[in-house]
Length: 211
Ligand SMILES: [Zn+2]
Image (cartoon, rainbow, N blue to C red; front, side, top):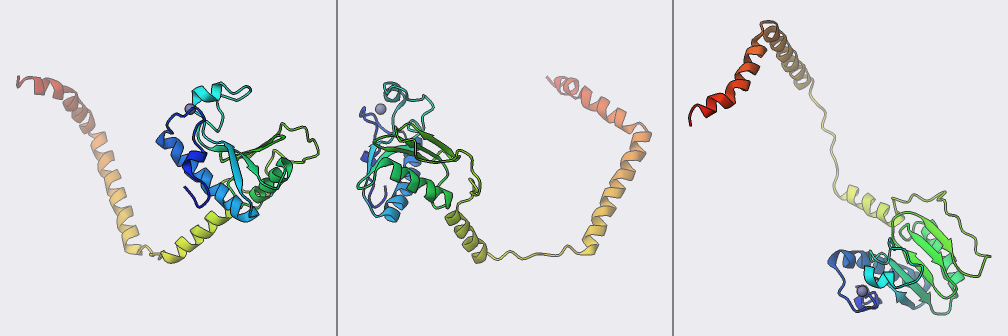
């Protein structure tokens, strides 16, 4: 999927096949993890990636709405770092807009990381010294720094010209609208619309008369 992450590392432990929609999420997740791996320069082990619903149900305490079921979450271990260090590192990267906004959960032996699209933090470890905030302050959850760069490049490559609207076309537009209005009022007063509606209502009968 990426330089250091293979699809089988994210596969469900029960051995079931990964649905395509899940695989697309896993691809995005793997790209995030690859960015993290390149940044911290340490190998990342995936304890648990995708979980199908039935396998997920067998895990005690796991939510049925778990991001693992969507293929958007991975429980990771980074060699040479404890889970609190990993958690703080990921939190910092997300705060700086380097990785997508999502969920991070601290556990004693691993860190849960997901790309749900909005900020979520929890600490289920025995370490209570790790500080984190569940409210986003400076970051924009929808716009990533790297996405913004791509956007600026895009808008540079396709210059958008502002075409001024000529006065004549504005005037003729107003003219058409006004004359339509005049015709409407004139016909309305003459009761022509009543006649038209009556004809439309009679249309089914008229069609039926052919059969
Ligand atoms: Zn499964």
